[in-house]
Length: 503
Ligand code: FE
Ligand code: CA
Image (cartoon, rainbow, N blue to C red; front, side, top):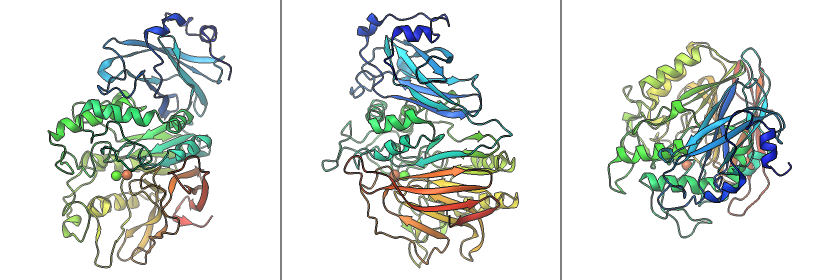
């Protein structure tokens, strides 16, 4: 790509759009503000969101990124080519201190199933170029390459997995939660959190998000493709449930803390205005169609859940099967089943956080109370709901556990009666550190669970109307930079025949 100049910007259409062109000399007013990179997200058939945040000093302790209270006009362009000779959409957005000088532009008017490129300009500075992809038109089902991952702890390892995801040039990337971690800085890790305390106020959440976004590998993954993001617990606090805090430290009103965490999350993600938080609430569960091939039902299993039964941890707990208990909340449960029953696409992907299949930890029936095993009636209603609707192509996508797993979903786990779906669990980007390739958690206690690997990486899926090809992709180390990625396990999921098949 040739160096960008004011001349190419004008030729590309910003001037013709009637926007005041900022002279390069104004660059001195704000030093380079695109330190957090650019991102796209929420693909639709006619557009996507493009995101950036102006932050010339991203780690300033006040969380304001080195910006003043003044609002700044940010110009944007979308082009069909990386050199921006064919600009098809352009405009301006206002970056204000209210939202930490982030911008979320909902680009429309694009063609379905196409690749585009976008960039921003503010105060004479030009951003890196990002790639966006529109979803295909309803009625069409072209092949989809989608990567998903979770659990990116900045201190636990380098973000090489993100770099490798960018190199695969996918149509779509899903992040299923634990995008940041809230904990205080460690003295022994490969990198060190900013700020050094456990984050619990808005300034600190902003600094932590900004620190993660300064990582060049993460920036590359965001620039490579549109993302669909959903959070898990660590974007706020470990193992919180609705407004029930996970532990008592640091002290303070948890409602205020959750509001701060949700606001900082929104400010740093390529989300639509429909997801902007209101006080301590944020509408994150949503549906994204990928033509007639697939529907992504992105779930929020934190904001509405009942507190963990019998407390956190792995327990034998009768309350875990209380039919009154919910992980999704009633409204989200109804919304999910109603949406699935519409049969909008061949495949239903449930992008969500915690382990979905039953997974016994020991013969006495001990299970994780933070996962769907702590809310079995909710799981049972969903599984029976989609099964009774005749849906045969449900694939649950999961994060959280820092290891890869693959399972058949069973209508009845104790009798092993009938496979009614498939679960793919991604390992972490870095959480847990290097891992151990020889670990194997597959157990006769859980005959429907077929695969487990304790290394870092992500999952690649290539979806067509007849099958999903699944590759579990791994790095041997993340405490050393730049390891290569390799596939250590592959499966095929056949349309109309739920469950894992050999490739
Ligand atoms: Fe995690
Ligand atoms: Ca988690």
